[in-house]
Image (tube, rainbow, N blue to C red):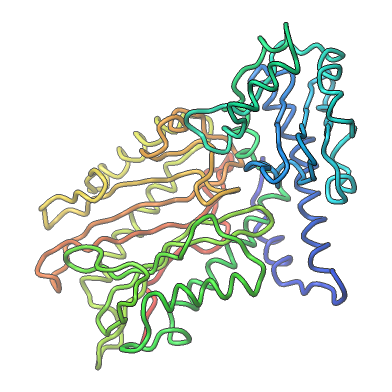
Length: 437
């Protein structure tokens, strides 16, 4: 899948001004979500259902308890229970039905073939006679674990034998469906990434920060106000605005006042069109008389950038994430970097220590696809696919003379898409330490 042209499309769309008029922005976003949804149903769903040998996928919702896939599957209202039912009936298309689910958004989306009463479920399943029925049960992946215990019992009772005995976990199916991206989805994610980058770099500037006056939490609230104004969501809570020094992180989004000489970090993301980013930026608050960051800090940052380039160049599609991690660390070692456990740097002043966590990203800040990350053990074994969205995240620890030889912890994180050519950045990755004057 060739995706190099998408960056151009992202720029055009992000620059476009929505048409003036009542409800135009709401309609525009809804229409784009419908386009994404239909593309996913048409292009991704047949592939992943057949790979996972699932003939029918049933997603149960309840009134006011719609689960984490509600936006992915088209919203809709259930007065009691409702079921999204996807059936492989052969051919190049999966049948899409909504039982007990209605409402303008889903009915006008053109994503579904059938709307049926909820009490038709048992008969509906018997007519299609699926051998393996996927349901959302998972111990490892939250968004794939939306069927409650009582819902499972109810589904078994409603279907009866032999179909109640054909229920299987759809854990891998849900991961594959979400993490394999269509072009319309990648464009939307690129827009979200550009919004994230723009706001982050404004937040770490004198537009927002006045040294000696502005608190860490003031910066976080400024970011949340921008999200509120633009109708943006977030997978996270308060943006993490923190100060780090020779002893590590000193404070995160508290009333601690930003001072000259502080090294600031930001970890956050926005949600736009069901796409959620995860990225970092850093800034140095200049002391009186300074015009640039200390030489030791700039060197530490440059070491992180060198490591990031090696990491990005090493990632390739078609192999398990666990194998990718081995290849990344081998490439880093060859370049003189040292692999460490998280937040456990060595005492060697001549070595930059590295730990990576290149996790899936997309419909949540921490996505559910293949992840080159020690904190995603199940998805660590999933095969990386072209079109997966990944957060290229690393922590580099380099000794700073200005800190008496203590190692500065440099966190770098930007979002990218994996193509058959490798990692491609959706927006410019972090290439500089921001300066607050």
